[in-house]
Image 1 (cartoon, rainbow, N blue to C red):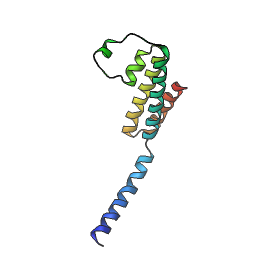
Image 2: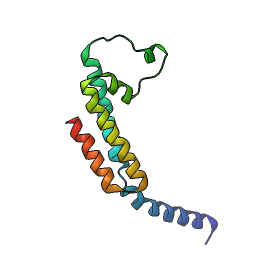
Image 3: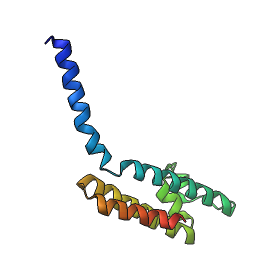
Length: 113
């Protein structure tokens, strides 16, 4: 075998080995739920009219989904819970606990409904 054929074969084997590992994770579900949550937080943040700027805003801190959720009051509490669920889902996904990951994603999606 030539060295080019060996490289192609090695690349093919490597790619085939990574497909099952990616298929078992909930990375895509986490990203999709995070995007939906970010959109819901932004929509809610704009629906209450103007509020005075916080000290953090005056110090040029960039808003995050969590800081927006905390600033929104009663709806922010629900969004904060959803963000906490997504954090737990990421941790479970990282440790390979797919069942816990899917459970936390389901909790976050339930809050969004």
